[in-house]
Length: 263
Image (cartoon, rainbow, N blue to C red; front, top):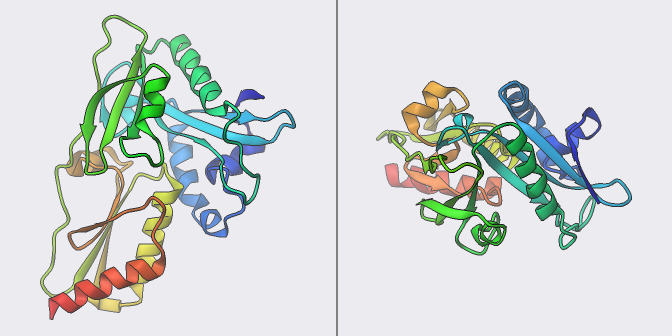
């Protein structure tokens, strides 16, 4: 196994979070690519883990914390670390130490870049991006946010490093009395969230003027500062979860229920 920097050879796989087998994820490649093109000049770093046969089984992406949805200085932020675990496509690469190897490579990289620490986020519940996994790698919790128990953790490389903090949500969608509003806040970094937004827009179009779509690009700093949240889909005031992305049918049912309540 080896950990390497992202090259053009593996770019499409990276843009799809290694889910090359998914036609739906492929459809939202342009959204992630726009984010990548903007972020690669702002310090985005991407590394891939390859098995002994040279097949990519994992990826990690991290960037200066100033371009994240977390408040901090002189730190790098891990957007996500991912080891492919599905039977589809390239197969299950879990249990080979890829996650630990990629994290170690990222730590060494940001040290050389002069950062004072590396920040990660995880969920206290035993689901995706487990906070306890980072704790086992020496990361210390410094803040908590959200109903899912999103935990902010870090590993410091300098005595004068200042702990990061979650940026709290400042604004919520406005609810109209005569129509349903679908609000998509989208940064572009996560294919799962990109897919949720695209599905929500597609379903909303089925209802014509009964449903209004408000799309907010939170990669735009001003928009993010206004809302204080990077990624979310709302149907009126109901937040739609995106892990995994909800089906079109589920989104349709939420919209229909909201429309019935308008009568």
